[in-house]
Length: 91
Image (tube, rainbow, N blue to C red; front, side, top):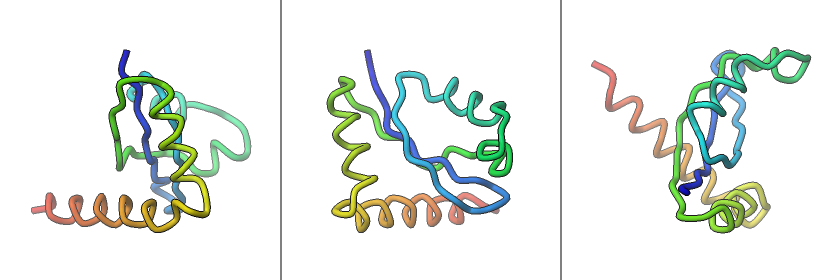
């Protein structure tokens, strides 16, 4: 079963969330339908980065790295590339 590391961006606030899942479509739907002060104040979320892994272990390692201090540069690069690609897609 494939596993994924994803980066979501909060449309109203511009904040980012890094997670891992085996079903990115379901995960995005859940994030956008959760209630509570944290989830609701950042909705809606949009998927901006999706990386595929063959197993949960690889995805867990990548997620941990991106969330770590050592992964700050890589995280910024991923987000910058996603932003650049989005701008290039616009007419």
